[in-house]
Amino acid sequence: MEDKDAYSIIRKEIRFTGAVQGVGFRYRAKYAASGCGVTGWVKNEWDGSVLMEAQGTNRQINEMLKMINASSYIQIDHLEYHEIPVEDNCKGFNKR
Image 1 (tube, rainbow, N blue to C red):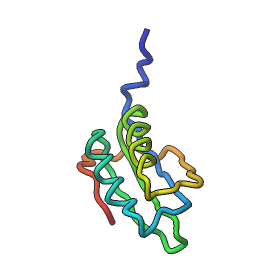
Image 2 (image 1 turned 90 degrees about the vertical axis):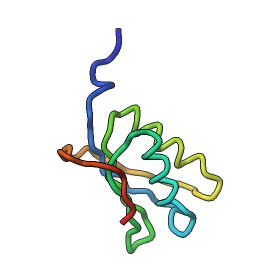
Image 3 (image 1 turned 30 degrees about the horizontal axis):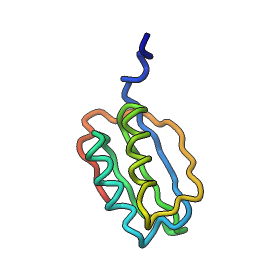
Image 4 (image 1 turned 60 degrees about the horizontal axis):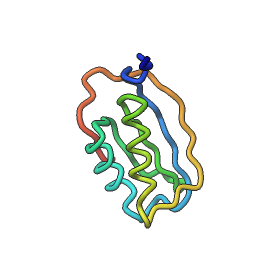
């Protein structure tokens, strides 16, 4: 029996720390999100972290995170996330 929540759309705010700025993280995130059908945005923060809002199924978001982490230039030391309200009419994935 398949988990019905596997297909529910969720939105997560995710903060990444580590070697995540100046290494193509936002470009990689946009590519991975587009390939996985995830919408939202990603931006560099003043403290050296990267902040992302990602919307899709839990499976899509996890696949996107795996693709980002597979980059040889990016080193994610820590990520923290929490669910936030889904945004209606969220289209595409943008770098900010």
